[in-house]
Length: 296
Image (cartoon, rainbow, N blue to C red; front, side, top):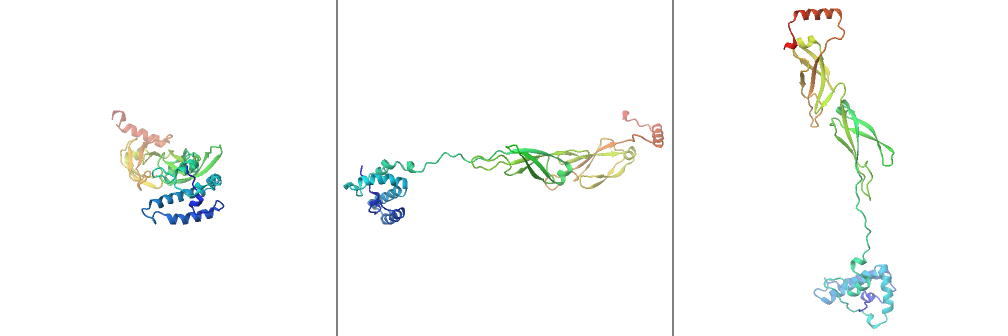
């Protein structure tokens, strides 16, 4: 195997040179023998490969020390002068380089097997909220246990008109990421609870309309308290207990700028403790009326 004098290839006299001198010499030789300057000259093309090969070895402190040990043993011999060394087809590096310094891949710094970053797990919790607070929107404080067992508090802005079981996402408040990955997210599921006034039925709100027997018999106008406004309605004569009155656009928000229905479930009530006059009137009515609901 022909020993290659990389210093002589770069136009340097010996190995007592700095990295800056090696870099400067490389630039000068590369410019002189560049294939673009010496078109179709095979000899110059091979020389240009040798120049790059020499710079690759001498510009790295570890490979330079390894080469210098061989250079010190061989530089005094006649074959120490620059000579060509065989290359595999289309290879940038000579057999000499491969024998002493391995393949190009072997000379590259070996990368540690590093796992790809992965996002932390999402966590989920839930809160209960009244229909009226869900309709209007509300800021609520919640507490979540961290992986260390500590209680961490968050303020959750519940938007007006949120739907039942809808989730609110709080970015980056889930479990920690792995190998530099982002934290997971916290999802807060909102449970809308029915109350004594309203029941949520999709986008509709249901509530009871209590009527006296005479209001149901004679018809009447009543005002009820809706979820965010008073609503006046007309009750037709002869309405029955259990019948429904539906009022458009007075229900829950539909998320599209509209609202569902307000549905009134009619319940006809009688006094629990009627006075003497009321009892007398009920007695007179029972004697006079031929109505029997069991025969209807």
